[in-house]
Amino acid sequence: MSKPRVLVARKTFDDVVDRLRSHFEVEANGSDDGWSQDELIRRLQGKTGVYIAGGDKIDARLLDACPELKIVSTMAVGYNNIDVAACTARGVIVTNAPDVLTETTADFGFALMMATARRITESEHFLRRGEWKQWAVTMFAGADIHGATLGVLGMGRIGAAIARRGHLGFGMPVLYHNRSRLPADQEAPLGAQWVEKDELLRRADHLIIVVPYSASSHHLIGQRELRLMKKTATLTNIARGGVVDDAALAVELQAGTIAAAGLDVFEGEPTVHPALLDCENVVLTPHIASATIATRRAMSNLAVDNLIAALTGGVPPTALNPEVLKR
Ligand code: DGY
Image 1 (cartoon, protein in one colour):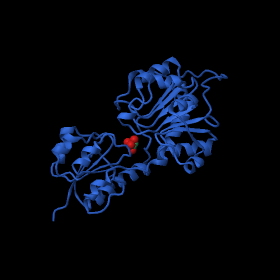
Image 2 (cartoon, helix red, strand yellow):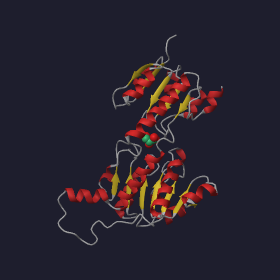
Image 3 (spheres, rainbow, N blue to C red):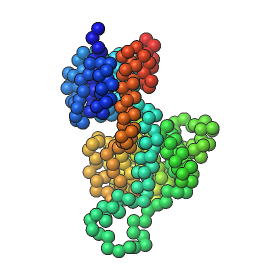
Image 4 (tube, rainbow, N blue to C red):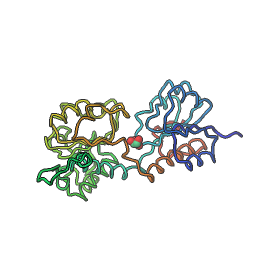
């Protein structure tokens, strides 16, 4: 019997592809460049599984053009690039890669927040430009993290891991907003208190955004929200581009409405709004919150676990639409 055919749409670790090759006939993209939508459709002909990353789009047009597809497995936790409803309607399983990146992403979120509050990249640029001539009492004086109020917008797994770091490691009072409030026994170890979104914006010294992107979280933070924040506050976005209105953020950063921002994700990335590039008081990183070798390997391997299970009669460990499996 011929083996199922699988497409790996993004370059990944060789041994991860080898794991797939031991079960399937595999065609793998050896490049970091994604394929165009038409090229992806062309290469998916006759394939029953596809391994993708966050930049690869799976929509109804693609699904209709690839009727043999049974599983879409993303190595990311975020899946706003996949039309899950369209997959479910066509009986296509969708899997993502949660949990394995939680602590790594929380480490990075905290690091970005600290770099933003303590003006680390801004001061490094100053030093590299040769402008450091003398010590000065307020030179690059930023805001404390320890003891300051941490605001978490989106208290999922990553939000909770950040709250835990703030509460236990830095003595930060933690406020959060989420559509649903956590049970008291989950709030207590995080020292976290649920508040309305506007109250969170008004009271946080350091706001970190960790909500998934969807139509309802598009521009959740725009001019109105930024103007509710303290002038001394920082905002860190490790969620998805589009949750923050980047154009409005650049205007408010220039105006001093808030002190600074740390951004790992951008609307329309890898393009970054040019006005953000002109702001000194913003730390910019290229969507690397989950980027440690160990974690990227774990994410990739989980995507492969899902493909192997789905195409060999097993139960994929992290299906987003498990109802498809019951059909
Ligand atoms: C994720 O897994 O969603 C991260 O943002 C990396 O893409």
